Length: 188
Image (cartoon, rainbow, N blue to C red; front, side):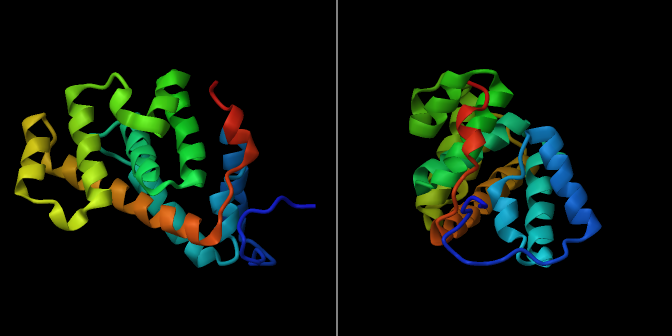
C-alpha cells in the first residue's frame, strides 16, 4: 500500500513524462526519496513543472543568499505558519547544510535562540514580519536589510523565497500534506 501524501484523493497522471521520471530519479539519487510535495503535484504535470521550476530557481539558482540562508527562510516562514510538512523537510535541510542538528532544531522551534550573524538576524526578522504582517512592510524594513549589507537583488530574493513558502505552507495545510518519514532521521 502506498503511503498517504495528502488528504485529497488525487491520482498521479497515468503516464508521467520522461522528464518528470528523470527528475524523480534524480531526487531518489540525491535525497534517497521523492519528496511528497512533488508526489502530491504529480496529478498534473503542468502544475508540478511550474512548482519545481520556481522552487529550483529560488532555492538552487544564482543568488547572493547561500543555500543555507534560503533554507533558513523556508523554516522561519514555516514556523510562523506552523507548517508541519515544511518544518520537517526544511528543518532537515538546515541540519544537513549547516552540519549542525542543534541549529536545525533551533530554527524550527525559535530561530531567535540560534547563534546567527547580524545579517541573518535582520533577514529572518524581515521574513517573520513579511509572513505575519505583510501590509506593514515599509521602507524602514528594506533599509534595515541594506544597512547590514543586503543588496536590492538579495532583498528581492529574500521576499521571493518567503512568498513561495507562504504559498507552499498554505497548500500543505489545506491538503494535510505529510512529510516523507525519512526526513525525521536525516542529518542527526
